[in-house]
Length: 369
Image (cartoon, rainbow, N blue to C red; front, side, top):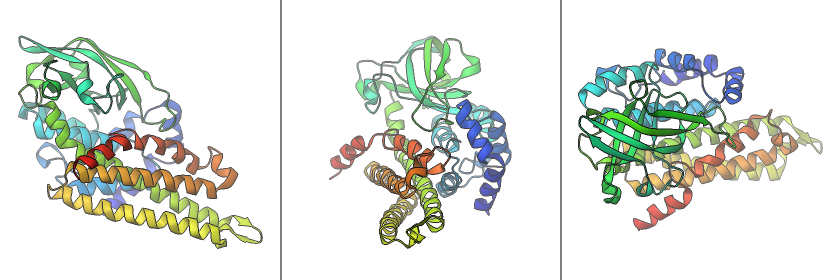
């Protein structure tokens, strides 16, 4: 039933015209976010007492898969609902939860998380942003980059150093309510290789004063621990989105090769095409089976960082291979932007970078051996 509801929503609000508009303007319209909230898509795994549905990650996984199959992954519901909002649900004060989560679930408060800096990506300990306590506020200075939902966000979780000498133990997380602070500035929409419809920008903080009660966890130096607790799920979120794109690419390619004729018969009847598709289908099936395994572990609180890293590494590498093979089967048409496979080819490239690059995933996995 939930799958059917998601499909109905996307067929209306994420059709070809809407997706083209998102790419052209660089962001998803707020009206679409509000419609998603009205349809119950922004709180399927958030607590019922704040307006959510009280489900678990399996609903999020299904939503992500449908977004991929409908080629609507620029609509960053997974980031908003499954990555950012849970920080507030898990670590914020009850007052903040009551104030912010209902708006997040309705689509009235768009959420982002700001970790990456121009000089600190995967190495979060290298961040330079600082937060210094001054009475009942923290004064935050610094800069963040590559922030998804940054252009339109109303609430952003900012990682900053409360103790610049303590390494990872000096990182804290702050809930910034954008309309209630001064010294917050957004940069321009960043011009990206792909995912043009997913707004990505820089954020700047200049003597930005944030109330003490907006420190997540209520104690300084807990930010890195919170990030590490949440990152396994974030990496599974990325993997599930990649999986949805894989399934969409395969479906499009099978349909195209059945219709396209060459040397007197369809491309699908050519042995080379069959072998290529068999290889892609096998990799996709193995990837999805592993994702089911990881999802079950996450639901039962048993997903460790190394296994989540394996999921992100394997599925995003499979995504790159499969979409490349699929584009090749489209021939010259695969290089034309009017064909969705070419858009997928661009969009897929970032999946092996953000949320921890493939190289970082290998380092994390190696530490567990």
